Length: 513
View 1 (cartoon, rainbow, N blue to C red):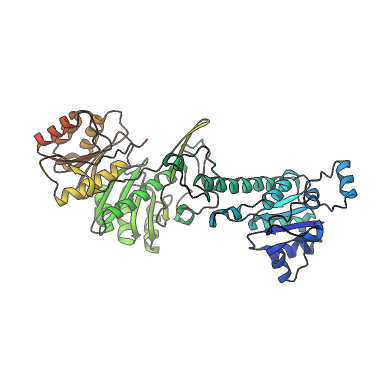
View 2 (cartoon, rainbow, N blue to C red; view 1 turned 30 degrees about the horizontal axis):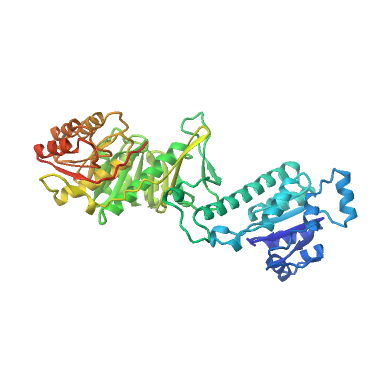
């Protein structure tokens, strides 16, 4: 039996190769792989000895030879194939072990692997007779089965072949993405092509199966971009049930929002409580306990079954407050003390307690519907407060500035049409997902109650008429931020001046669907 080994990632290679050798496999290799095997005291036949042809073109041509690919591709069930092997003195290869250069580590023409993908694809194509191993994580199981049975089962070879094609597909996707970014030409793509290239090649690997999908009858999983390490991979679950699709979705929204609040208002503690990806309450406070209390008081009814995102560590004092409040499906924080975990588990064992690192930027947004997809770059808040325009006679105070920034941030992360009211560093009223902006304003005012008086409001898009603004000023709102851009902006600004309030324009809309 012959095994061909040519790997970039040499983790576990020597132990795996030693196991193969003990099982009677002849090891064929070249380059750095062969050197690693020989250094460990293993015998490896050089590829050049098999082909009778030396490596050439700085190693670009090594395994691309009939004596290698004939040994991989021959169908042992076809007499003519067996005769061809015998006629040309080609030894069959039963096992190919190969993983590819990490192209994204230092993209270049020289890191575009040719021989590796060719061997992997050839072995995967002929998986009825040849096993292909493309990851060190597969070594233990392959050796265990070979030791137990002497051969690999059809099911195992099939699974290995599928993984092999996924491996080469992911690699090709990385190369295409590099070309989309300009490759080595040095010319940056157009703004459009940089975000939405002519073709989009996404390679995703399943990270974990969720408890269920958006609804219990649906099956779902969390995927990650192949080879990436998103922040979710470093989340630790200290207690609670398995996460569902919506737990992931809402916890991600909550964790990102609380970090944005921290960035917007350094020096403040931040807590966000999310329900169905929208904030029921978000607050800045002198401490995490203070921020949580304020966020909860904003809408305690909607907080039931929600996600509590804490911009810091959960100690026992805060855990006691959370445990005494409405049931939370998830509490996500930077860390938990042992006492905090015990306190929260005592309240409800099913609550998921997650400690997590800071989230990475969102990047590309891909939304599928049937056989179509919509792709866009992430909705970032590009225009800073310093560039907002005050278009009214009244100017904002420092207190209003903080509330306007908070309301604007929360509003941008709320399902459209959205209106958000904030007062004293707390989002006190959220009107989300309405077909009418006037209705969204009415819901936000109703939820805020008396807290609407003296509050600041944000609208994710312009006011098409003055009626939405008038419903806010009638409730006591004293400052408003909105994108502007309506043909009736002057009418709306006049209404703001007539009411004696502050109005800021950002020039930046934040619809969210």
